[in-house]
Image (cartoon, rainbow, N blue to C red; front, top):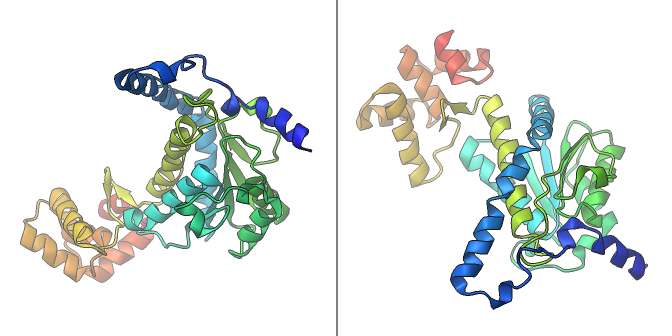
Length: 303
């Protein structure tokens, strides 16, 4: 069994030696930094090649969200942390329900701050953790695994397929090696890492870029952005309070005091405040317009 795993690992592109960094240990600090930077520059180009597949994944997510479904990220190690990170940042950015996008990581929450080596090998635990979230066929499971093979992630994805849900997989191995049954595979191939097997580097960067695209684009298509501004955020901190006021001021031309007043009248909801100010209507009418336009501010003020 161990020899089989050895043979599998040695053939993964994420486990190969980078021919450009063979003597990196003999370089100066400045030279090391330049090498890392040069390798990092290749990552966005690898992601660019996957845009058609990322588009397909976003379409799946938007449809699921409109049906009341959720996005569940599943990963281990760096990949798991990135999924949890992306999920946790959506509510303050887009005002989304914390249940809408969630992340689970092999080893549980303690794995976020300290590596839980071995947890990624428990295939059955991935399925258990997914189903503990009451996962159903209207939800979407997104596996994240630089090497593709992570048992914990594979187990969760197989369970998601079993219940009839849509599945997405983000991996940094070539598409021709993607032998899992999923609806959409996103495969930015970034090549061998600067340090052999250290997928927290280029692979992690590629995964972060992809996850940013998935949720940001989906939220834009759900009407949570007006122009290029976050307009569905909630004023849950001083920073977000001031950002909300600034957004209203920039869109409407109001001064600080009037922007603050209309936000109070709108119960702190930026989208409602914008429609109230731009159309000269009360809160109830602004909300009616937003419902009619599927939550899009542009549609609510142009109707």
